[in-house]
Image (tube, rainbow over all chains, first blue to last red; front, side, top):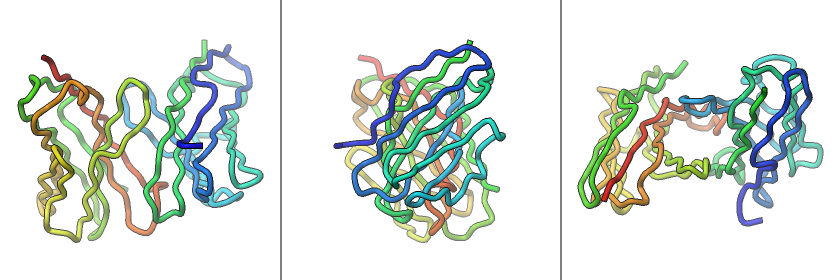
Length: 113
Length: 116
């Protein structure tokens, strides 16, 4: 595709439910990043993939958060037992390699009620 | 750890005027990258301008320019001839070299409103 695509654009879920957020990077980009942007804050790093493997997951807040990228393209961020504090915009970005400019998607706004 | 501070939560400017957004940062690194990103209501982060710390010359991109003061750890963005389409959140960001965007650290942002 022309840019990074994230689906859904908006997601409302009940506390305690499981959610999956999807990111389609720019074709050919080997590096993929997830960020979380809480209200009134800048984005904060969650996890970085190089190819299929998670090269750095130091930003994941706890073990309820997990992400995969099984074929080195599409990535899914998974959140178990959602809490109201998980409400945020989740941004995905991709870059050709780790040394190239990253391009961002339009994010998924997650609301936990 | 790096920190990025944007002390102006909101700024207003009239169309065609010039506005400067402030950013300071703290790091022990000697080389790094600094960025200004724009986030319109669409939520997509768009790169406005980038500065490499080892370059003394201030970066310029059309109507956008920076004032990079390395000793003071200051990195302000000047927008000339402001346009209505410049209305957005602006984020200052820091990145370590050769470490990729996993080290990208953002400030809290400045909301810029351009009025007719």
